[in-house]
Image 1 (cartoon, rainbow, N blue to C red):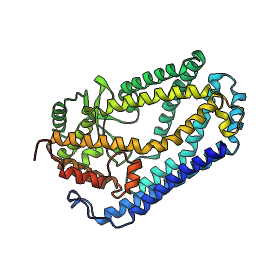
Image 2: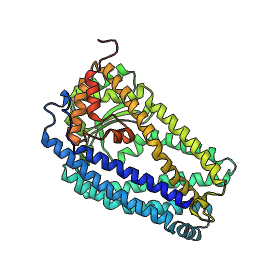
Image 3: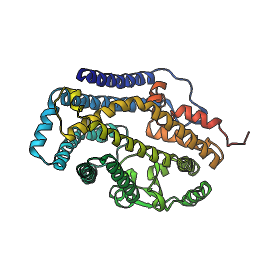
Image 4: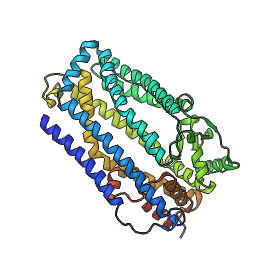
Length: 416
């Protein structure tokens, strides 16, 4: 069984690398002319920079993923797993302390391994292409704050779950799911006030008249939002975005200051109309429900498998701690998840089409959204020519060229 799992892991890993290689080669081929919406917005020099940016990112990801593969092989199949599990049990024999130390040390190792790649990505790759605006001091501050917040959440989530496993052994799967679900909803509610301000400065929209347009769009869409704010994202990156945050009465619209600089008002409102489409079409609610149902099913399945006492034998081991078995299950789930990725991507792209159609109904045409997306692609050096197979498996949005083509041809329902 150990050799079978090793073969499955290598198959998934090689499949990922093959898809990356196919996508890379596809960008180097000649492509058909771009849609009319691209005219005057993208020249050959910009396309060349986009290809160079994508290639640089692919190379870095290739190396980073390769390090992860080597560490995984060494840990799971090189004999380190049972040794590590035994050492942690000796250091922290208590059930809760053992679990926290087991996962805490692994997360710390993951952080240490990832730090050089984060530094290189921000201060070499992003700097080279003009995206990085972050100082080293700010990067250190963000990293420390993320580490502190992540550490607190880890102790609460993992410690609380382990306590429930210990106290209600016969039905811990239901209690753990309920605990995690409740805490996640609580964090969605308080995050705009407690967590996000630790990293960003929020302020009213500085662009004169824009908030009136946003409010009018919100009223037209039937969506209520407490505040419409801009955020100082330009302190960190030249990339741009817009999003909703919070739930219920604390829901707010947040626009990156970089987005305000890059788009005309009508284009920005069309992009916002797309985001409103996700709310009005129920995508946010449905995804939340689906994720919780998956989490519930995963907790029950984990409960069932962990009680079966045969998980360690999958790696040829006689025994593993509870934490070790949970780690093994998580790794197996990541392998299975690769085969579910195309379905999740397909469903996400379907939702994006529905949100695009909602935006067309709201603003009267798809031209403004198409124009805004093209400008964002230009500013962000987006890859315009991904391989169709790569799109089908990984892309949560339709590729930009086909999306713009679709938007240019679509009209509001009932309009000929």
